[in-house]
Image 1 (cartoon, helix red, strand yellow):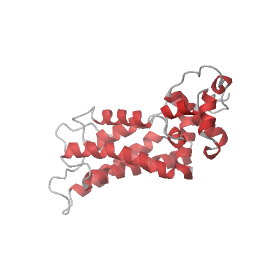
Image 2: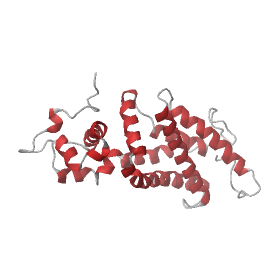
Image 3: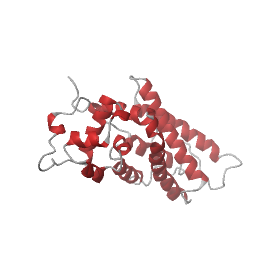
Image 4: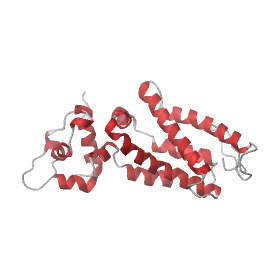
Length: 234
């Protein structure tokens, strides 16, 4: 059976430009746009195409998204709000584990959405027109982590430690997605877990080196183990 999100927009999506425009939402408009990107290719879809498929006008489209590029990311701003909240949900959790758990939640996808999400991430990661736009999204995502790390360690978010950690987390996520897209049998969350295990070990080693700041905590807990009530921040 064809997935209605992946297939050509239905008659109700095409709508009519006569009379009152049908109501929509940012999430629905994003799904319609993704459907068109998958069917026709990102470069072959215009804002007008998405608006027409949704049964709305161009001006209404821009109430939801600033550009066609933003449609490929869905409601990313709302996801960042949830991401920030999830990071602060577990104040006693060691830092690496707290970030890993929040990154996992950020990337948890219902089983029925896996196919569409693979399409979305291929579009985001492999479409030349989206490269510059993606850089802005990555920066906003990293800022959430850098803010959290700074708060936990008593550092400013622009400090080398907070920035290095946020960049490492972005690298983990992008690497996991590349492997997930290349191998349909792989599990995205397992790939993220595996990389965070290595991150914890690497940052732990840095924390014990002679060149590390004296207040730079070490990480000694396996990602699969329970949080230590007396553990260091890492």
